[in-house]
Length: 217
Length: 217
Ligand SMILES: Nc1ncnc2c1ncn2[C@@H]1O[C@H](COP(=O)(O)OP(=O)(O)OP(=O)(O)O)[C@@H](O)[C@H]1O
Ligand SMILES: Nc1ncnc2c1ncn2[C@@H]1O[C@H](COP(=O)(O)OP(=O)(O)OP(=O)(O)O)[C@@H](O)[C@H]1O
Ligand SMILES: [Ca+2]
Ligand SMILES: [Ca+2]
Ligand SMILES: [Ca+2]
Ligand SMILES: [Ca+2]
Image 1 (spheres, each protein chain N blue to C red):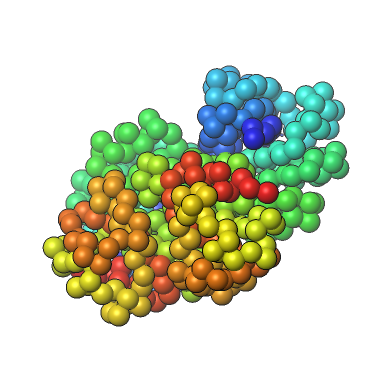
Image 2: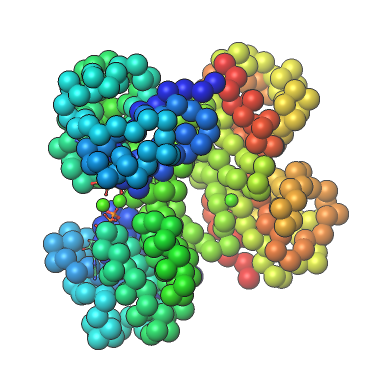
C-alpha cells in the first residue's frame, strides 16, 4: 500500500511530513529552492532536489505529474505558495495539500483547487491551549460538536477505589472505555478494577461532563 | 477556574494559543517586540503590550511575576527564545511553556528549566503525514506504544450491514466504542445497529489491527 509523495518546501513542517512518510516506507521526493535545505534532508527522503516550484518547466522536468499527492509546505513566501498550488492543479495533480498562514491565504488556496488546506501553527496553538486549560487531559478526539473522547490522568482522590465505587456513569454521565495502567491497556475494564496511582482513564461523553471530570482534584 | 496567562511572541502559533485561551474566558496578556503584531491582536487578548522579552527590566515592569503560566512562542530568533526562557525561570515563573524549532533548541530550553517544550511544526507534520497515509482515519489518540483509538470512515463495503454481521471483534480484534452517524453519537452501540453511508466508527485496539481495518475499501 506504499504511495509516492512529493513534498515542496522542507521547512520544519514540510520536513516533518516528508520524513514521517519516508520512515513509514513510502517513496518521497523532497523539493526546496534552498540548496542547504536539500542537503540537510537528503537522507530523510528517497530523493531531494533543488528547484523553484513556481516554475512549471522545473516541475515538469522533475516529473511531478507522476505523483498522486503533492504537499506544498511553503510558508512565509505566500506568493510562491499560491503560484505553486496554481501550477500543480493546472498540471492535473489529483491531490494537492497546502499549508496556509492565514484564513485569507487559505481561502485563496482553496479557490485555486487545493484539496486540503492545513494551518499547522493555528491548529497546534489550539491543541496547546486546550492542554494548558485542562492539564489532566493528555489527548482528546472531538467526535461531534459537543461529544469527545478524552485521555484523563486520574485525580488523587480516586486512587484506591474501584470503577464500581466511582460510578462515573451515574456521577458524570461518562463511560470508561479503557484504563491505561503504566502502559498496560485494559479495554472495557471490569467494574471491580481498582484505580491505581498514575492510571489514565479513557472516557467518552459530553464536553461539559468531561470538563467537570477533568477538573477534579 | 479561570487563570492568568502571558503569551510572548504573537506569531501564528502564539496568537492561536492566546486567542484560544482568551475566548475560553481566561485573562491573557500578549507581548511582542513588534508593534504591528501587538496592534493586530489587541482585541484577541485582555491586554497587548510591546516589549522585548529578553530584557528582564521590561518583563518586571509588565509584572510578569504575577503570571503562573507563561508561553514563549518566539520562533526564528532562537537566541531571543533561549534568553527569554532563562530570564523567566530566573524570575521564578512556575510554569514556562516554550516553542522549539529543532531538537537541539528544545534540549537547550529544557536544560534552562522550561516545563514543557513544544515542536508545533514537527508535531503537526506528523499528524498530517498520518492522515495522508490513512485517509479514512479522521482523528486518533495514541494510548500506548501499540494501542490507539481511531475515528474511521466506514468503507462502502460495510454500508447496510449490522455491527453483529461485521463482527469487528472476531475479524479484526477491535472494539467499537461509538458510531457517529451524521453528528449523532451512539455510545456502546447495539449489535443490531445498521451501518449507514458516511457513518464514522470509533474503534479501539492494536495499531496493526487498526491499520488493516482502516485500509479496507
Ligand atoms: N518557490 C519555492 N520553491 C521551492 N521551495 C520554496 C520556494 N519558496 C520557499 N521555499 C521553501 O519552503 C520552505 C518553508 O518556507 P518558510 O521557512 O518560509 O516557511 P515557514 O512557514 O517558516 O515554515 P515552517 O514553519 O514549516 O518552518 C523553505 O525551506 C523555503 O526554502
Ligand atoms: N525578544 C522578543 N520579545 C518579544 N517578542 C519577540 C521577540 N523576538 C521575537 N518576537 C516575536 O515572536 C513572534 C514569533 O516569531 P517568528 O515569526 O520569528 O516565529 P515563527 O516560528 O515564524 O512563528 P510562527 O510559525 O508561530 O508564525 C514574532 O511576532 C516576533 O515579533
Ligand atoms: Ca512556523
Ligand atoms: Ca475529529
Ligand atoms: Ca518561519
Ligand atoms: Ca496520548
